[in-house]
Length: 507
Ligand SMILES: Cc1cc2nc3c(=O)[nH]c(=O)nc-3n(C[C@H](O)[C@H](O)[C@H](O)COP(=O)(O)OP(=O)(O)OC[C@H]3O[C@@H](n4cnc5c(N)ncnc54)[C@H](O)[C@@H]3O)c2cc1C
Image (cartoon, rainbow, N blue to C red; front, side):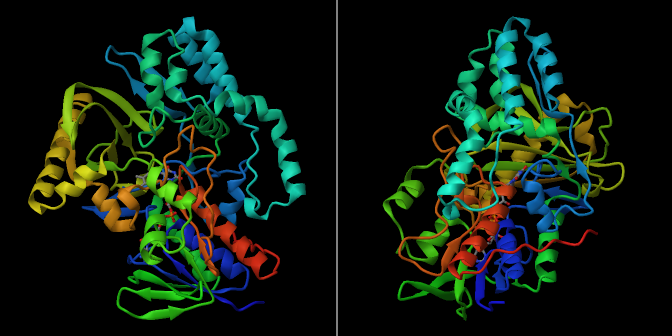
């Protein structure tokens, strides 16, 4: 057993995961979290008897058959947890009553699309065959790429070989380009709406196909109980492994001596020393503030200067005294057109996407439902508005009012049943999690960024590692958790110890 000490900054999913694996491997760790609870972006907050769920609407690896499943099992995140697999990934309504349902089952999806647009039979088949091929697409996550030797590289090449043509075809195709191939005008218009709204029209078809393959296989369901409960299960696992978490402990600086990280300075001025520091906090803050931008390369500068960031959102939560029993459930929600454009935030909106969480009874009192709507927005707009707290609060109220009015048109009678509303903006997410521009998925996935992987160490700085959503475009809880596991494998290699994994007890 080595007894080296590790300080981890941030008790989000990445920090908790790094803590769990470091404890499993004999390191003495502490996590310093600026908030009073774990989870970071993966959170839930309470208002008037409702739980507002801030994150996971689908968890890759929720069932066996996906490589991420064993990661969640090791972290004790799935034991005893109910998972809901929705029959629909998305439901998109048109102006004249047409509906495009992105069914989770690929055969059903193909049948439905062909009925909607028989003239596009060929393109639809190409699309659904792409989903079928994605089912077997390899995802080698056992170890980080930094530890690949020539044999690993060869093995991966061999596993990937049957997919070379598939990759060539789909990774450079954007969802918008693909949609243009439909002759049916409705399908052409609504198809790109099926990818969720932090992504743009340049979202790669490959990402969409993979997501739908997981839906078809029922390996990316919704964990009942909400996101904070999910994060709490990692917190419990970490504490059971002997880790220590200090809440309300904001780190201001990473202490460095002779180009070696030796500890951290907290906002209260106290200093804590350890053999290694792992930052699982916001990437930009870590590199440019905590380390004063001293350990960067051209590549890092280019990332933080040029790469697109996942679009932050205006997040509207509602508590409704109704159960919406007649409504089917979707992974991403019901997207419907508004009678007339409505100004929400900085621009006019023509559509709205609502998620009705009546499939999770833990989020609302009996007979009631938690609902959420969100819109992509510009950070700068909110930054400016935030200078004036009165205008900022009034704007939030106006947004809630407009959203309720629009929802009331789609669900007549809803407005009179609203018991709670809450509006979060990019400033809320920024304040709460420290993430750059208030985003909660790190870099945006596009056809250009899809394959990018950021380094988990910084040039010239020893005994320092980074984990979290800023290491791989697209973010998400699986990426965050995997990065925690990966950095501990790097630590073990540095210390010449074999990497070990302890099974979590089943509840
Ligand atoms: C509305 C919404 C929907 C989402 N949907 C999904 C989904 O369906 N599926 C999915 O996989 N993911 C989803 N996500 C994304 C997912 O929640 C995040 O990508 C993931 O949780 C990021 O984890 P992280 O640990 O990398 O970072 P973070 O969650 O940002 O954690 C960083 C932690 O560091 C702490 N911290 C920051 N600075 C300091 C400091 N100076 N000192 C001490 N502590 C500090 C923060 O408080 C935070 O706890 C969603 C998120 C949101 C908000």
